[in-house]
Image (cartoon, rainbow, N blue to C red; front, side, top):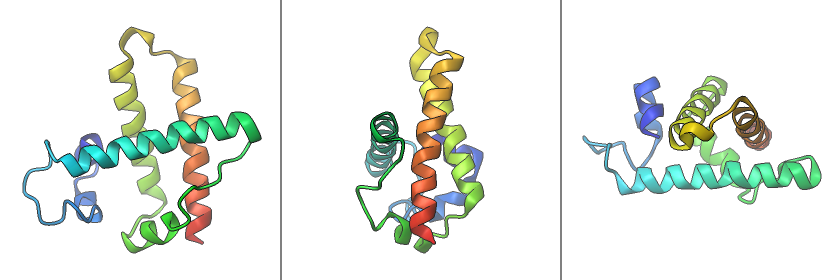
Length: 118
């Protein structure tokens, strides 16, 4: 998530738990949110493999994203940040195939959230 804030600093205000905090680098709430997003993308990959589609476990995600002012370009920033973070963590194991797998899983999740936003 810190990568998101580096790529798009204006998004800080979109995270309710960061709006009033000066320092975000070591924010436990930001870390928890990061882990939640990672887990949701991972679950999306499993769903895509099993059924070919992603179904949101939390039906309120569309409303939450709307309330926070999320628009299509934000999904691109999050995808880039996610891939960059996973690449960093993967080290030598990173490959085009791994990148594509994570990208497809993220796109499945993003698509499901966008549907819930409409």
